[in-house]
Image (cartoon, rainbow, N blue to C red; front, side, top):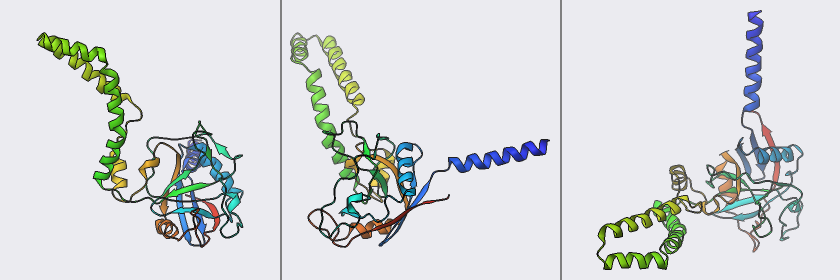
Length: 271
């Protein structure tokens, strides 16, 4: 009896372990193959992408938008058998997925991401999973990342300072200084400083690159300007050279490669 229970537990463990493993897919193209790990904490995108892969939806489509040091984008059904020079449309509005934008994922090289329509017509940031883009990006220096933070954060801080340091507060500080009320002046000045820092630290738009982001962007590269704006649902684990090869192709005025890059298949691999 005990032996039977142990065997059953072992069987259950194996089944559940296999079920919980992250999915891996292989995108095969006429320029080479790339493998990607799909993230389990973006289940809507993962499952929708896998279903379309099973249906063969992406087969025969093109990487139709290619920008060196930025990205390669493909999968749109309007790219299938598209005549040379034809401009490819956005995608399939019937295949949208609610956003799963997570802070711990960022646009490092090889990030597998879902495009979407602009905020003006898509305020809920729903993704169009009928296509996808892969980041090539570039390598940044630490100084470049510092400059990017400063460019975003300085206007935020300046606005907070101007809001907190109202004309009334400025007048009160001036009055205390003129009256030589040093203790009162210092107390009010500290309150003002603390309020500025608190509002700045709580502002969700403040840009601070994490150690992981800095490591990735200064070594393998990426495209940090897109962070927090699109859903990232996987990452490349092999075939980075194919990303580079595709991104280096000559393109027309619409960023479509002059040489078609065809997606032969998207296969779901076992782990």
